[in-house]
Every structure is written in C-alpha cells, then in structure tokens.
Length: 212
Ligand code: HEC
Picture 1: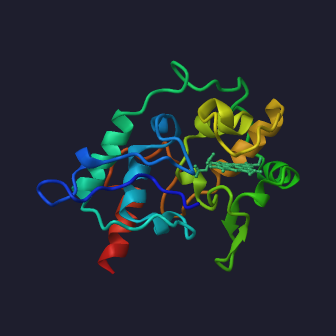
Picture 2: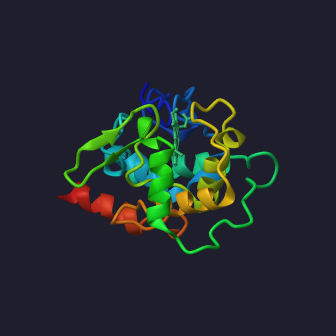
C-alpha cells in the first residue's frame, strides 16, 4: 500500500482546496496524531510541495500546492499533534552522548535485516531493499533524533499498530544505529531539528527545482 500523508478534498464550496477540508486517511505508513514528536513543520511543508524530492519511491502525488496552502496544512498537522503518552517519548540516558560510529551503526542495521523492509538509494540512484516500510535514504532530514532513538527501541510506543518489528536493542546498539540513521541526510538539507524557517534549506532547494 502506498504511503500517503492525507486525503486532500479539493471540492469545497468555494471550489478550491482548503485545509479545513483536510481528512486524515487511515494510514498504511503512519500515525499522524503525534507527528510533532517525529518531524517538523518544515519537513512536512517540503514533503507536501514535492514528495519525490525527498524519496524517489514516494507514491503520494504532488498536489502542486501553493506555498500558503502547504504552510497551512503543515501548521494544521503540527497544531493538532498530541505528544505520545503524556509528555515526551522516553529517551535512553545514553542517547546522543557517545560519538557517532557509522560503521557500528551500519553493522547493526545489516545484522537486523532492516533492509528486508526498507530501501535506500545506492550510489547509482537505484533503490535497494524492501518496500514494506518507507525508503530511508534521507530519513535523517525528516525525523528528530530523539524520536528516532525511541522508535528504534520500541516502535509500538509511538504506533501500537506498526508493522515494524520491536527489536530489543541494548543502549549501545540503539545509540549507534540512531547515529548512523541520523547521518542519512539530504545533501541540500541537514538534520530535521536544525531548520526553523519555511523558506530555508530544503524548502528553498525545492523552490529552486520548481523554477528550473
Ligand atoms: C517487518 C518490516 C520492518 C523491519 C524489519 C524494519 N522496519 Fe522500519 N518500518 C517499517 C514500517 C512498516 C514503517 C512505517 C511505519 C508503519 O507503517 O508502521 C517503518 C518505519 C521506520 C522508520 C521511520 C521512517 C519514516 O520515514 O517515517 C525508520 C527510521 C525505521 N523504520 C527504521 C528501521 C530500522 C533501523 C530497522 C532495523 C533495525 C527497521 N526499520 C526494520 C517496517 C519495518
């Protein structure tokens, strides 16, 4: 089933789309009710403007939204997001404290067969891996590191219905894996938590693509 963010209902009374008419669809890939724990308005904005700029495998259509509509929708989703179980997702006490060790992270990724469900683009631009979960080529530009660390430790805390396996990683494994996955960023954009301006970084890159 395709990953999709929402159903867009463009047949409002005025005949134009409006974010009031937004309906959240039963998502094969994801739980939107806690989306602010996971990602940023900036990422949602850029995704809405051009899903394929983020993931070559994206099947969500490009709705050719105007900037203001994409801004309204991303703000709407963030505003309606509730924190997972009260305040925050539990974070390991060792999270982000040790220096990233990409090689150790890559080994845990390989040994855990993450690629049986997730694809990444190789140097030639081909997708390699399964398609049960979303593509992870640039996921470090999407998810917040603390969310990622919690997701890797137990995805069911965030989404009880997820198809992703609950690995019982120890602190060190979870830490190196988080570090490795955080490093998978879009070269035009850095980590999810760094950007605060709709028009900076990734969004500006997308705007540039549209002008070409
Ligand atoms: C059995 C299939 C499966 C395996 C194995 C699996 N995942 Fe997932 N993963 C999923 C699915 C499906 C989702 C999307 C969320 C959902 O629909 O539940 C997901 C979501 C994710 C996300 C969030 C991606 C995004 O764009 O929102 C990350 C990061 C992730 N997985 C990392 C991993 C890592 C690291 C491993 C190995 C330790 C792994 N996954 C193993 C199925 C899997």
